[in-house]
Amino acid sequence: MKQEYLSDIELYFTTDISNESLIITGDEFKHITKVMRHSVGDTLHITDGSGNYFETVITEITKSSVSTSIRNRKKHKNKFSNIYFCFPRLKSNNRFEFELEKSIELGITNFIIIDTERTIPKGAKMERWNKIALSAMKQSLRTYMPKIEYQKSLRNINSLKGEKIILDQKSLIDFGDFIKEEENSNRYFIFGPEGGLSEMEIETIDNAKIVCLTNNRLRAETAVVTAASAISLINKNTRIL
Image 1 (cartoon, rainbow, N blue to C red):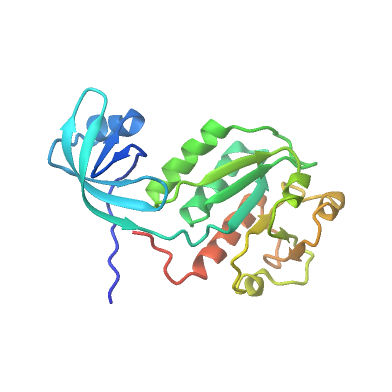
Image 2: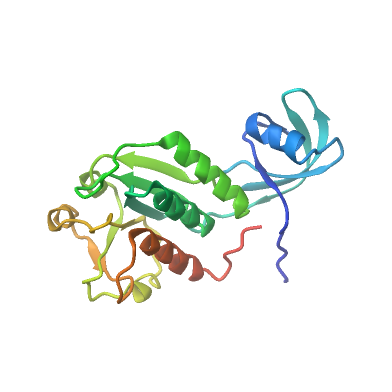
């Protein structure tokens, strides 16, 4: 059976769903009416961020909202629900946001931002990160809103249930072979900042697997995007819609 894909569409986001109708407000409403200049009768493609995709038609436009009726719907499985990317902020905010955005475009949906010994900018910017996550989800036509957490210490990762994988160039275990293993339990991929994780930090993670991503040294953000690409490509069907 040939699989159908959508492309060249605008994907919108709302969680305001009632029976067979959806309501869009806020920035999404402004984009629909002010930028795209949609009107009653136009088709809108919408996700609720929980794996549901809706093809809808606009039924009403008010001063603050757009109402649509559902014409078609699909439910998608999150193929990466057990994958967690754990990495710190970088000295360059642009580079950090790049790795977050591209990982989301490649399908990663769970993130834990951590402070490490060598992290220079510390603390959380959840509003900014969630805005990037929403934009990347819609741009890549994905239907799962990424979940972003913040932890002040790498030690907090140790208490989470699942397998811990630390990326380290000195390891003899090849990352490419490692990710071919079928695994349903949670897997936490841990990346260091510029300069890497300290030996003491690595030792705080019990029973961690240390794996090598490439033979050559990569920038911190390049390592994250490379790992996300590799994980995405092992799935034969990486296109969502």
